[in-house]
Amino acid sequence: MTYSVMFSALALYLLSTLFYLLFLISDRKAIESAGHFSLLAGFVVHLALTVFRYIQAGYTPITNTHESLSFLSLSVAGFFLFIKKSYKISILGSVIVPVLSVILISALTFPAEIKPLPIALKSYWLPVHTVFSFVGNAIFLISFFVSILYLLVERGIKKKKFLPISPRFPSLETLDSVNYRCMSYGFPFLTIGIITGSVWAGMAWGSYWNWDPKETWSLITWIVYAILIHNRLAIGWRGRRTALMMIVGFLSIVFTFLGVNFFMGGRHSYL
Image (cartoon, one colour):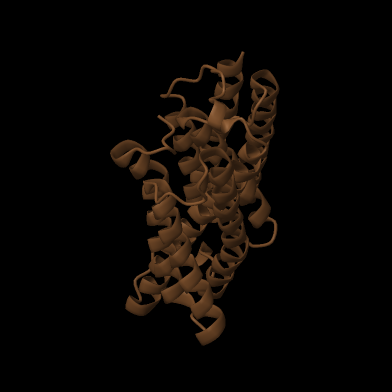
């Protein structure tokens, strides 16, 4: 049942991907609406599956690579639907929806069976730490693509070379505003994720900080975003600088989430 429901969610995400790619070409509102509602339906099905797995397992299902990638995909879908209500960034769906679909497909390549929870993970800190961490990662994933789009639009303006779809891109001001909104939401989520993880480590392992590879890279990521927020508020960083730092920060997140697991290991490995 779990696999059939997940494939249903994936089918809806892929249908939404198709509609958004068609919207990229045709610029028809009806097609964009179809993409939006397909994404919304996929999100609802995916959320229901996650809740069902929680009930079935008896713990928050973010404990291995399959569950982590699935929840990351769910979080990306949810935050994109949320941010899309405030900004006219529908065209970004032609990038975000394919990406979250690929993430969910990747989740399906890993073992999905429910296993007994390791003793160290049996804690009420599990849902707090993991949910805040992964939602923060999802928010910064979206900001990563917003930043890339910002740099592309800026380059087109400077060189006066425009693609046929360029008039439908959001303005630089809108993209910078979206980035700031992502920063405003993502950084607190990331911070709470790190703090709760540290408290949990202290309870489980007797030390709040062990310089485990994932802990170290989480701190590096936090410092990157902290510098960005400080410079934006203190000295008025905007536009290109924000976009570049957002890209650097997300690359650090990717290494923290995947690179550490596959190449460095440690106590936090989900393999």
